[in-house]
Amino acid sequence: MELILNSLLSCLNLQNLLGMVVGLAVGLFVGAMPGLSGVIGISLLLPFTFTMEPTMALLVLIGTYCGSTYAGSISAILIKTPGTAAAAATVLDGYEMNRKGRSQEALSIALYASVFGGLFSGVILLTVAPQLAKVALKFNSADYFMLAVFGLSVISAVGGKSIMKGLVMACLGVFASTIGIDPTEGVYRFTFGTVALSKGLELVPALIGLFAVSELLNQTEKQFHSDKPVTSSSASGKYGWKYMWRYKWTMLKSSIIGVIIGATPGTGAAIASFMAYGEAKRTSKHPEEYGQGSPEAVAASESANNGVTGATLIPMLTLGIPGDVITAVLMGALMIQGLNPGPQLFTQHADLTYTVIVGFLIVNILLLYMGKLAIRGFAQVCKVPYSILLPIVLAFCLVGAYACSNSIYDCLVAIIFGIIGYLAEKFEFSTTPMLIGLVLGSLAEQNLIRTLAASHGSLLVMPAPSFRLKSSRKSGKH
Image 1 (cartoon, rainbow, N blue to C red):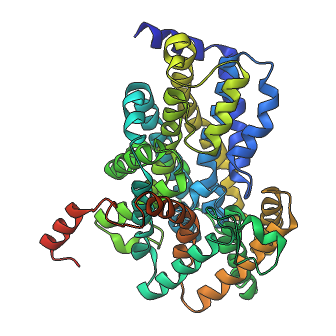
Image 2: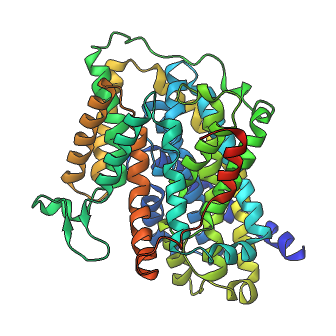
Image 3: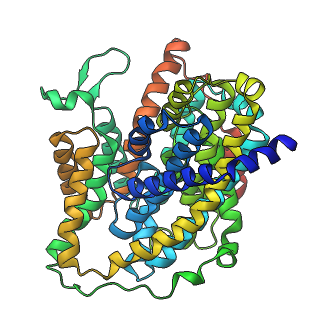
């Protein structure tokens, strides 16, 4: 307790507080810009942290991490473009709420759910980090494969009116995820002799095309028939913790899913948000509202993807294993400061470690207030006429796609996926299953290959979800 109290006093130092605020501000900016992610923000700030004290340097980077994860929901809600892959599920209902004039409500729900998920994961990080990390390490390739399959099962909930059309789009997404170099044999697949395709398809440009560019094409086709600005139905001050209380169980369940996924190395916030979305719809009293602008769906996806943030630090701090790309960069920042991630952090540098953990909790509290300020500014986007807004959005989308790897090729990917999304909507094909296939296809493929290699081609090693089969038979569902 004394160590935690000292860590709290260290975090409340003016210099460290300023560092957290700067990190959050950078994170909010890069997260809200399509194509710019937390990885880019942290990478940009990393050189500036070399001369800082280790505590302040890590708090700045963690602030950027948390800020960017939440801010991805801003562009997802306002312009149907997930700022980060973590907000891919938020776009399904957040943008529909925006179209109905409920942009401030959607932004507020995303903010409060994000803070809830972040604080929940921070408490888990502070209390049971070493134990949870040991459990997560017991996952083998078969478990990872079944995890991906479970995520793909969400297609049944978001596939639109026709499950068959949803499966077609999901298969198309999985196919797109296999383009590039084979992960086991190192041969080129489906590149059609094009060198640019050899590296595969970047997820963010595909997201930008599938949602933002396709929507721009749809709005252009309508010739600005509804060029009147969309106004929010009520003030954002109405949507506080009292309002969020109705979604308490959804946020708690989704945060738990986020923590479990986040603590498992090699997964990510996008998987957590889709799994939480599917589970929330399955247990919802109004599942028919999902995909039509459900506040509960926004709360589920945002509390899950922010629940991942603290959990990804668990394997990094306790075992020296990065949970995702961002924590790999954070791990590098630790080593630059002369600290080796792993169990010795809690023994040799306990004061620094607990200061970082307590700082993570404070960052999420600061996020609530800085997010409220950001909402007031970002919500004004809805008041801009479409004839002015759409060209600006298109420019941001193409710049964001280019920024992923500084390649015009990624801009072409965004445009091609935009055309696919536009045509899919014309023929009543949902683009969400394609997105899920893109996100989970490579994870499923790689771990299936590893499992079959280890078991000499036998599928009997796969964990069987027998408890789900029994429960579904009892309930009469097939």
